[in-house]
Image (cartoon, rainbow, N blue to C red; front, side, top):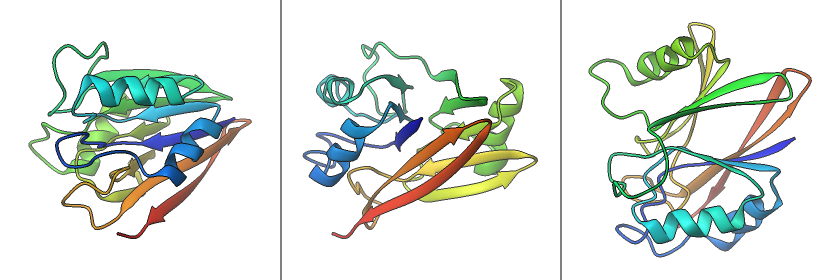
Length: 163
């Protein structure tokens, strides 16, 4: 099972489109995870149309009309995931996101908001932040992750585009 993990599109507010190489990765994935901040209904619909299946959550700049929750869970090949945007934390970002995973009894938390790539284990929870798929400021480059999930294990790769 191949996942495309993205966040913080910010289309059209800070970016025009998802870069073509990342569009190809999203299309090729078995399932797409988006951790919020689409920024528009059009950006959500584009991601939906590109994906074979989509788990997405709303971010702090998303229109209320988007048909997605603030937190979602799913399971693939023995790995339980929680997806949250990651905003609203009064304390440490990583600890906050890991706490969301523990509350949901999940192994992996996917979050966005910071536009900074993160792959860390916090209190036994794997915390993933793919950065910004469009390179929206304050990111310095467009980033995303792919994750191969099999038999209860996950292998994550970060992909970057300059510019």
